[in-house]
Image (cartoon, rainbow, N blue to C red; front, side, top):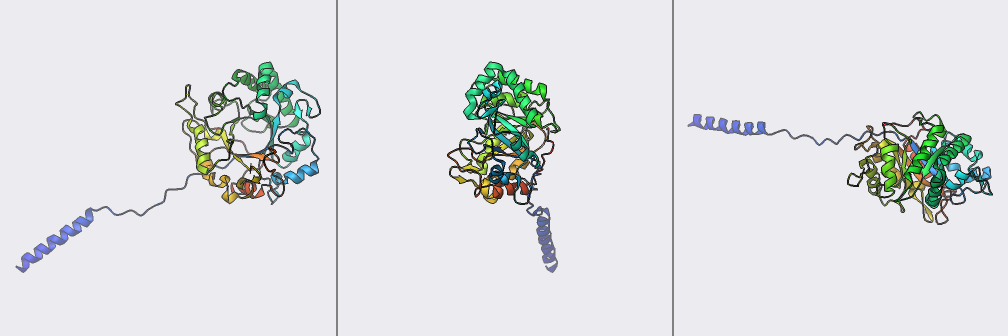
Length: 370
């Protein structure tokens, strides 16, 4: 009897231990590895001067420095940005090389060598933006009149001042793409594409919408023909700010993701854009107050979108992860309805802290090409 009980006990123990042996060991919870972050290359601000983007007066440079020192000194002697885009040049005046009370050789008199050198002497790159929403009709007129000469005049101004050029052509549904192609061809005949970035006048960029649902024909053309990584014509695009501030990081990222994904459902489709071929834009002033992006990095979209901007993966174009960087609208006085980014509303606490946080290269390094 005892023997039977002992055998039965051994069988029960064997069954129990055998059951335990067949159960898989529980694995400890291991967090997913953090995304690989690509350093930000472009970290710039559009600049509207003190007269709401006309630059129609010559600036007193002591006053200019007082109002704009945050751009070239984030508090430790280093600039807050590595690019300033002076906005805007009137396309028709540029075509005609107008000389009048507010314009010299087609360029606003406030966009002079003293202002350009104020930034360039600190390692900050400078571009001139042609157009803007106010000058859309002027773009149309200039392209229809002589797009090639407009491109040559832009190239001449870039050479004279040592700056790059930005195309801000905001014709939504019926842009003159043939004329714009002629403009680009003429500009590139003087300043060929320069991947090294050493020739500042060769930097030629374009503004597109925040996502792919506005400026659709322009976006389709630019993505397919001018911003591809095989035979690039333009250096990169700026995904502009929307008509209102993004409500959240998710809102901003949804717009930027549209460029990366493209719109295959459109007819014809918009192709995907390489993350390395565009920047995302944010407001630094909203209404009567400075935005957190200006004054408080910790609560800003510069902070909350940082991981996305540095790690978003390609989806059909390009091979490297991460967008090119950020652009900010806009320094000094972009509108009579918005506060100016001058003391006490200067932006060291937002844009400037972001420059330190993301270790922005100053001067700007050669850009990723893929």
